[in-house]
Length: 240
Image (tube, rainbow, N blue to C red; front, side, top):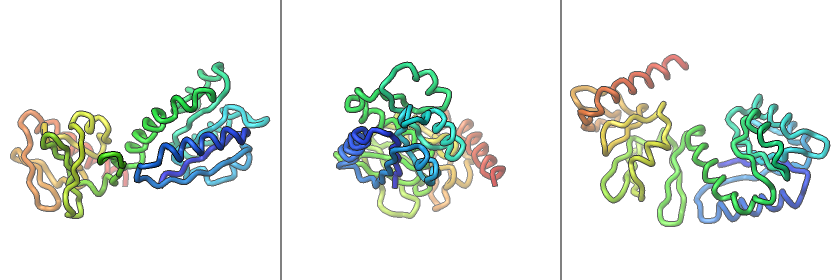
């Protein structure tokens, strides 16, 4: 479930963004909820920690949206803030509050889909799931449920950790590698990206998975793959 908040004192903007969200998610197999607010006080009293994406007006009645954004950063550092404004001049200040996008209200219809695509890509990294498309429908799978990715031209395959049948979709290894969290996944060759959580060890040019599979590791990748696995395993140990 993707939780999206809209905080704007213009009700027509709230309706516009809500409609754009409905159009955007039509055909995508992603569940989402929308929470709407017309004043900053009520928004700040809500459970800010549950919001994944927040569309925030730069000025809400008498309240400064930048101050609200600073409160969001304190309560929910992972939230993606989309600042929305009628004016260009607040753009530099948006960077200071970690705004993900600064959207001019007259441009909403034109940039909405592209900005939402970028936001969902960011969520893939911060929230721990991978999104893929089969024909016109979007799907997602949690990182923990992925054993590895395999490239077998012309398709990519996901091997689920629960032993279910592999998932195939159109894509290429380079694009997928760029999207994945380097603190979770390690590349071991041109055709495989492994989930470090499910990788027991790398030894003798093989990666040993926790389901008993052995994956060949390319000579060109073995040293870096072994170092990355050690780094990730140590990081998880130290974070406990």
